[in-house]
Length: 138
Picture (cartoon, rainbow, N blue to C red):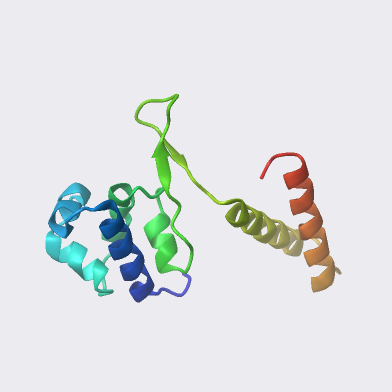
């Protein structure tokens, strides 16, 4: 498991809750947890991952965002779909998609190719990301 930073998660959760204007007690209620558990999250105290994952929907984040924030990633916000009532659409940034694509490509090359230098792997993954962008895929 990646390094976890509960203080970072606490700041993101509290900032987002305040941005949305949701009182702590109401946020906890919407998440299906006690207000004490929500408070522990906002204070950076130890909380089960199952509880942490419950804050996503309350804060308008894509599933897994809170755990991602705990591990150093940025939260991914969602918005309601106009075409599919009840569905949510992720608001991933292009930079985030490019970085994730680059990481996946590099790991695939490392796993399947021998003899490439680190620089060659970086060059190939950068080229693949450019091609994906040029084709409108990211």
